[in-house]
Length: 270
Image (cartoon, rainbow, N blue to C red; front, top):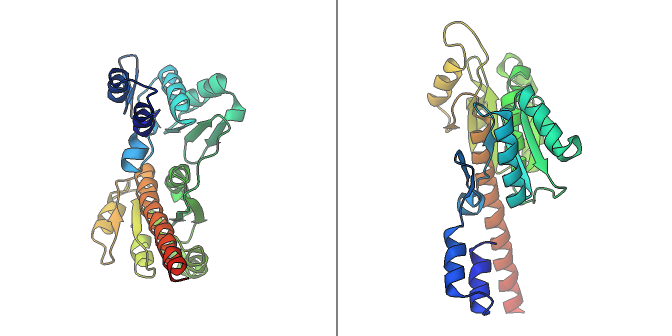
């Protein structure tokens, strides 16, 4: 039950004010023991889904937190999943109820309810094959936020001719935002941003070695880009995917409202 349901019940006389107050005070988070408070209203408040970061959590705690999320939202997204976490999750929920992405190290748990579609479209690009894990994390997150995803992988600057047909594919899908994952010197987001007319999110990846290795050179290069970029932290696929999905979903809503306004004006003239 959300705030609108509570207000509607009060208006219709199905709930008294004291009960409504208690219900309203309980909105926004669900506690699990004394270690977690799940932000059950994050998506409705900010447009970004709640997720469980499995890193630094015991497999047992991840399972119980996921149970609460599925009960509240019908789905649960878990990131940075280790083999130990995966084993316990499969035992708890069954393989049929899990979507495991081995590259992204993500698990989506569901009760059969599909993620709602918003009409938003997000492009995901990787410079090299080694950058795909971070790109895939962004893809999973944007998909769970309702977006259609178009992916183009391994089109980095070492063979820049590969990028041209990829851009045609991207533009044909009319994405609202594009995530570009790149390691080493991190050049590709700058090039893509200079060739497309939608926001580009640079996702530096911790590939590369020696001086500037571990994603540092990629991060600094993206921050110094002469193209207009938004840049997230190293390997922050979740943040990149969520940011791109927010943009794409806002565009989809604006387009829908604009279309309705145009139709209303036409109907009014008729």
